[in-house]
Each structure stands twice: as structure tokens, then as C-alpha cells.
Image (cartoon, rainbow, N blue to C red):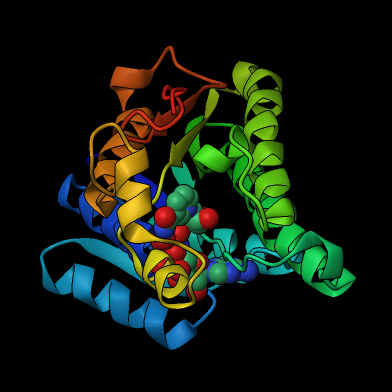
Length: 250
Ligand SMILES: NC(=O)c1ccc[n+]([C@@H]2O[C@H](COP(=O)([O-])OP(=O)(O)OC[C@H]3O[C@@H](n4cnc5c(N)ncnc54)[C@H](O)[C@@H]3O)[C@@H](O)[C@H]2O)c1
């Protein structure tokens, strides 16, 4: 990762924060992109204070112009862009019969449309020199959960987007992959546990390895897919799920 510039969206969140720290520790320059400018700057300052290279930028990935601006700021600051990790996301379980159309639209906007907008902006910046993109999807790209229709549909859409961009941009030297975690011990999961959307004991019982994922489990998989060790891997979804998707028994 030494000398590479990597833009991370949702970079002040649980998975994005850990991934940013992990990549910075490996020598990458991190573009900390998130909704809140102050939090993004604070996270970048923390990376710098711990010996890394970083800059913070406000970016709502549902806004194509904001994505273009974030990428332009990254290229201006670091002179290049080598990779992007899309960790931005929201989770708001809701019964499908009563889900307001605006909530459906917002969820698809963040999970699916935003993933495309930020990938498009980064792809344009990397089309001459190549690079690597990793989308954070979910086991919900493959496995249906109730009360999560737009979340599941959005993540499944990103898994297919991963394949399409991988084959379309292969000749540009841009690899595109996805990492799909099962439940990760982050604030998103804590919020769902607190709201009664998730039963932690049941979840642990459903995961063959018997625990929630830690953000570092996800960050390790992302770092691998961005690295040259994964130079022949593209269009792939890697599930970091403790065996969740393999499990088909009771
Ligand atoms: N936590 C889990 O159990 C879990 C499991 C599978 C997949 N995921 C996925 O991993 C990703 C990160 O989740 P997390 O657990 O770190 O959540 P988190 O809530 O800790 O972080 C999400 C981050 O995304 C940012 N964000 C939200 N909307 C945005 C937008 N429009 N533009 C830019 N940034 C935006 C938030 O500000 C926040 O910093 C999400 O895509 C989520 O769906 C999480």
C-alpha cells in the first residue's frame, strides 16, 4: 500500500474507520470521506497523529457532484488515486407492507446508487493508471432477511455491479471486488440490537464460528483485495461471515 492513495467512504463509521486505519498503517494515504466534514477531518487528523497520511473530505455518495469533488480533492492533494473502498451505508429495518416510498428510495440511493456514483467518479480518475475498488456489501446480497427489502435488494444490486464494473474496466487495469460481512460489532449493529431489530444471542447461534465479525476481520479482507496479492481477482464477492452463508441446517 506504500505510496498509494485510497479513498474510503463512510470512513468515520465502524468498518470504514477500521479499514482506513488498517490501510494507513500499511503506508497508504487515506482520503477520509463521510457525510460530516468535521468528523472526516477529525478522523484524518487521528490517522496523521498516529504516523499516517490522510485528508478529510465531506462527501454524500448519493450526490454525483459531491463524489466528483471528493475525487478531485484527493487527486489534488495526493497527485493520484489508486483505490476506493465504499463503506458508506445505512440500515433501517421496516415492514415491507408499510414502508414509505421515500424510505425505499433513500435506502436504494445510499446502498446502490451511491455505490455507482462514487465508483464512477473514482473509475474516471483511475482509468489511465489502473487501481482497485472494493464495495462493502453484506451476506444480505445473498441471503434474504425479513423487514430489509431495500437493504437486501440494494446489496444484491451492488454484488452484480461489482461483476459488471469488473469486466467493463478490466482492460483499464481497474479491479472491482466486494466484501460481504455478516453482522459486525459496530454502532450500526448496536443500534439494531438496541432497537430490537437484532437478537445478539440468536445471531451468534446462527454463525458457525460463534461470534460477530470484528471490524478488523472486514478490514483484513479489504486490504487483501486491494493489494497486489489479489492482482488476478476481480468481479468477486468475498463473504466474511463466519460460515453464515454455508450454513443450511436447522
Ligand atoms: N455492521 C454490520 O453488521 C454490517 C454487516 C454487513 C454489511 N455492513 C455494511 O458495511 C458498511 C459499513 O457499516 P458500519 O457497520 O461501519 O456502519 P456505521 O453506521 O458504523 O458507518 C456507516 C458510515 O456511513 C456513513 N454514511 C451514511 N450515509 C452516507 C452517505 N450517503 N454518504 C457518505 N457516507 C454515508 C455514515 O456517516 C457512517 O460513518 C455499510 O454499507 C453496511 O451496510 C455492515
